[in-house]
Length: 424
Image (cartoon, one colour):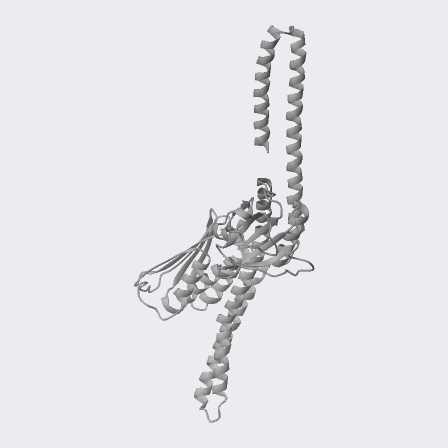
């Protein structure tokens, strides 16, 4: 808008200059200087008034836009689900932007189809019902094109656009913008109007701002859903399989006529498995608790585990910290994965290294957490196949947090494990 005002003022000044030249010539030919000057002053006043009007109009329009955007953001505040966000956005697009209809499509989990998830207008006669829900393949129709390209679009006349797909009735203009999360289209906001050429670049700009607000809100809930799924997988993988093993061992141990030596062996395995399951559950509960978000709490937990593992094994250890650790903030996944890599590294050192000393360094610099664990033990061949899951688990967890893991080990030369993880 500011740019348009500047352009207008430039044009007006140019017109003023031309008018002045023309009046000067005309003055010499027909009027005296005094009469021409009064006419010139009148033109100047008109030009200034027009410029002022345009600037005031532009500012007023901008304030109105900001009011609408603020209203959208406020309306979405406190909504608990993605579905709530969709329905509220569709309703506000009609009521605040003057649209006659708005439909929001969401991609399926495979990214192949778009489903109508919310609507306001003729498609939504009551409550949260959608009449004749459409499914559109990604790449088909105007909505499918937006989902595929990730770009907003205005169709001034749908009768001339072969991509147009008729929904409940034919409408002559259409606008659609993507809601993108992490660089990928998550949903599409679509609106149609019976008049051709109804939508303007102003509408597109407003709708893109609204889509950005929706994306910001939705990203929070999508992240939480992914986190819940990850926790469920961890519980299933780490605890479910252990419970199954305990169940089988109990059934075998309860068989009549079993020798006492074998019975004690089964009971010992049950004890070990249940202890491992309790430890895994403790780690998951610790990671979930938001009280443990700070790096100070993570370091304290690491020190407690190091003392618990290394002191009974007779291994001397040195725990050092560098950088502004108190300013680092970890989310649940980062906290859990960093701690479990640390835990796996110490477990492996105690079980296999025969080390007498372990140096532990945590270093925070430029939003990177660097964790170094070095022992003076036997070392091992990093290129060889290993039957255990320790190294594999560490690599998997480092990949999940987009961290860089380096494992350097030499026979009789000790082992160094270096994890460099991005943190906020």
